[in-house]
Each structure stands twice: as structure tokens, then as C-alpha cells.
Length: 272
Length: 298
Image (cartoon, rainbow over all chains, first blue to last red; front, side, top):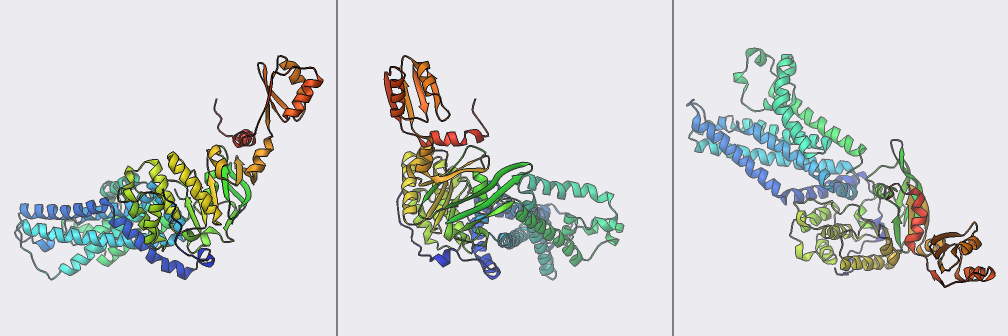
């Protein structure tokens, strides 16, 4: 080890200055920069991005290659891989927090920025950005996969609105993941819990609930943001359907509630 | 200057830290010692806001840690050297820390050089040994060029060269006017460079004095070898003197070589050997914390 002298000439007032709310607001930018460095330098992020592209291309391409319906087009099929992409977004959201708790870096960041809401805000923005990136990747790969699978590109008339609703679904899924990660703080438990809930429990619970309530389950509501699925459902369910913005509000409500609960716990719990 | 006032933390019915009040002076290395479970780590976590105290407060240069605008510029801390993502390289770990604290990124190169990790800066920390993690964690603490260092067992895992460097670095840091608050189980090591000691047991403050004052508490140990150990032990018996018998050898605390010699002469006891052993900090601390040790070896 060397004995290089320290180099930053902080003055005493600069060292022991007291923080204010406006400075905390400004420090969100620093927290975002830190989150970006962490996320972009991890191999896991690249693996999830690649996996998203593969899922999009393979699912949409496979459906296109095996479709019996000649009217199916790439502009419809690109939606089908997105529930899986949403799961990957949720897992990424979970990892953004649980990895910090698990490896002890949560203590490092909380001691660097005592205003804990700054950390939550930076992580929320980053998770939303990750959701956007995964959503765009999944959709582009799905579209390309479907085209390669041999279907027509289809009409572009509803493509933009379909794509935007789907993006919202994936962004909100990433935020739900972040919230669940903040609450549970354990990677395996959070991922297992979220997948169990979305894939098993919600499916088992749904038939036991009144039709009106069924649509308010988180992932059932989230799924309705995609332009797929309801055509195959019984009329009684279709009759109770909400409008898409209402489903968006329901799913966003779950995302918000989970992040708020996680934030409250972050303030109340001792960090690892 | 760090001041702790009435710091208290309870977990259920157990008081982990009990009304701790002391201060850590500028320009000094202050050791923080106590047996396992004495509340050292809890105290250090409360100092930087990671654990919420039930009572009391900690101030750094008069400001609570949670109120500091740029904590890393005043306080550098290492409470757990394992606190790093195994998938990040050493450089990226420090870059993320620097960005979060608004510290110029060129400090990353400076601190990597300071702790001797330039050669492995692009290796993932998952492959680091404990000593390398310790160095990287220390580099993180030094990023903001702080005036105060809080270190929990910083020499764990370091090689002898690293331990010597750390000792010199911390001494130099204090000589430049900084405050160093360092917990360690290596009492001998601490005795070589600490100026002051804060001793805790079962969460309570047992002593907060200079190393010399604490060491002097015990007094010297006198070893006497005599063919009449029982007679000498009887002659030495008194409220302030303790005598341990090992065959013909007596280990005497609370007396002096001259006093034992005089007593032996007065009682006609022949001495084969008489020597005085200077008090060790380790023995003194064991005396101090013995009654408060939570976990005792068989």
C-alpha cells in the first residue's frame, strides 16, 4: 500500500454542512448516476436484456411459425411474449433492491445518503427505465421474431397505442418488483413469491372471487393492458371488464402501494 | 470530534447499548474494545444512522450524521468489509460510491493507489480475499477525503504488510488532525497505535481513558520463586493484593518488587528469584471486561 496524501481540499464548512430538502432533491441526480453505474456494470443486466430479446423472438417467432390462422400478423403477435418480459422486468426490479440488502451495500448507500427517500426515488426511476428498455427490447424482438416466423407485418394503425399500453404494463411490472423487493429484501423469497402469486395463486384465487373483483387482482389487471386475451374469456367476465385506463390505475396502484410500503419499511427497519 | 451522549439501544428485553456517553478527540486514534456482544458494532451502526437509537444522540463536529449534507466528506466508515456486490469490479464499486456522494471520479484512482489495489481494479470483487475486500472497503471510506474515520475491525484479513500500512496510515491520519475511531479484537495491535481507549462490556461504558492510564490501572505483576510459598502467600495476604500460586512460584498483583522483598526479609522467607513484569494492556482489558463477557470459553 502507498501513503498518498489526501487530495480534496474540502473546507470545514463544506465537510459539516447541514443538508436541506432542496439539496436532497438535487442529490437524486447523484443517486441516479450511481444506480446507472451499478446497473450498467453488472453482467446480470446484460443477461436479462439478452434473455428478453430471446424470449420475445422465440415466443413470437414460434407462434408465427405454427399459427393456423392466416389473418394473424406480426403487429398482433409481438404482444404475446410480453407477460414473460414483464416477469423478467419484475425480477430485475426485485434484484435492484434485494441485491443491495443481500450484499450489504444497502448500508453503504444509506450511510452515503441519509435521506432515504432519495435512494427510493433513484431506484424507482431506474426501475421504470429498465422496464422501458426491457419492454422495447421484448417488443422489437417479438416483432422481428414474428416476421421471421413467416407472418405478415400487419396494419400499423393500432401499433403505437398497443405498444404504449404494453410498455406501461412492463414498466409497472418492474416497479411492482422493486416494491416487493423492498418489502421482502431476500432475492429468492421475493422472486419465488412474486412468480407464485402471479402464475399460481392469482389463477387459483380468481375463480373463487366475484367477477367484478377478479379484475382487480394485480397481474390480472396488468395483463389487461395488453391487447390480447379477452376474446377467449366467457361473456360474464367480459361484461365486468374495466376500461384499459382503469386497469392501468389498478396495476399502478399496486406498484405504488408496494413501493410506499417498502419505503416505510426502509425508514423503520435497521439496514442490513 | 465525535460526541456520544446517552446512546441506548434495546432489542426486546435485552439492552444492547446502555447509556453510552464518551467523546472521540481530534488528532487521536481511539480504540473501541470490549468482548463479543458488548455492543461495539451496534454502537458504530448507530453512529452512522444505520440503526436507530432508542435514546441518546451522536454528533460529528456538532452535527448529527443524518443531517450532514455530504457525510462522506466528514466521516469515512467501514463496518463490514464484505459490503460489496460480487459482480462489480473494484473500480466500478468505487465509481458508484463516488457518484452517490458527489465526489470527483478521479478520487477513485487516488484511493485505489492508496490501498494498493490498482493492479486488480478491473477484477470482480467476488474473487477478492477478505484482505482485498478490507482494502477496498477502506478505499471507499477514504473516497470523500474525510476528517473522521470509523472502522470496525479494519485489520481482519490483512497481511502483516497491510496491518503495518494500516497502522501507519491511521497514525498519520490522526497526526494530520483527523479523528480515528477503530474497534479491534487485536489488543496488542491496538496498543501499538491507539492514543485513547473506550472500553465497553454488556453495552455499558467501562472506561474511556488514554491507553497509558488504562494500562496503569492494573499495576505491575511480581513473580517470586521461594521454597516457602505458603508462608510468603500468607505474609502477602491483604485486601489490595492477590496471589496466585504455581508450585514454588507466586504471581502477585497489587504489590511491588521492593515491597515483596521487604516482606520476605521481615518474615525470614528465602527468595530464589524475584522479578517484576510490566502490565500489559491485554491483561488490564481482560480484568476490566472479564465480568461483563457474555461468551466465555470453557
